[in-house]
Amino acid sequence: MSNPISNERFEQAYTYEGYRNLMTNLLAQGKTTGPNGEKPDMVEYTRVNAQRMHRLETTITLNPELVAALKASKPLRWTVLSEPWCGDVAQNLPTIAQMAKASEGKIELRILLRDENLDIMDQFLTNGTRSIPVLIAQDTATGTVVGRWGPRPAAVQQMVQEYKKNPTKTFKEYAAEVHAWYAQDKTQTLQAEFLVLIAEWQHASVSA
Image 1 (tube, rainbow, N blue to C red):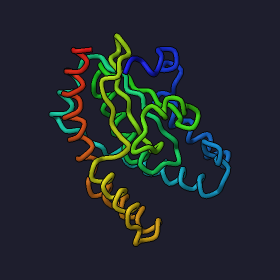
Image 2 (spheres, helix red, strand yellow; image 1 turned 135 degrees about the horizontal axis):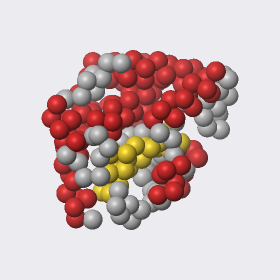
Image 3 (cartoon, rainbow, N blue to C red; image 1 turned 180 degrees about the horizontal axis):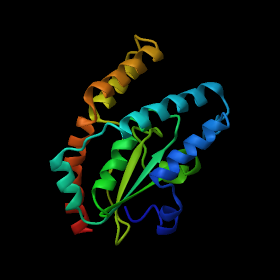
Image 4 (cartoon, rainbow, N blue to C red; image 1 turned 90 degrees about the vertical axis):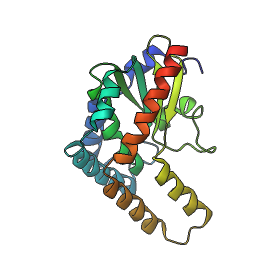
């Protein structure tokens, strides 16, 4: 796929710091993003997610092998489609931001709000749905898409699919199990997935 996110659009997207500031400022107003941004439950999801993200930001340790791969990466642009009220975003985006930072300039990260960028979102659906987060990796020089990740680690995606097929629990119970998985995993599965992907993206980037 050739350059679905223009250079201008990428540069105008949020940095991670800008995205976190957006969350903070909206919560201070009792709001979040999206068409339902003033609904109390959506605001509460965002408040809890801000706490999750802060906890991860202060506890994440990247594996040395992953850090080495990031530093050796060809220049890439990572664009993440996101919304502050999404629990999977909160559980994964801080680690993605840490990876981009650890690359020492090889990977540049930007964040787009899904509901304000549906033209891009609809090019990266998951089983026909607008699931987030989705990370789009592009060759910096050409803009060519070299790969994607998302919307969640494979083990969690399987939990989601099983729940949708046979929802024997309430959504609240199911969500609690998902977040318990994330807490126990401590970002290790996400890091392992990205170690594999970075190698694949390097080959695709060279071939682009």
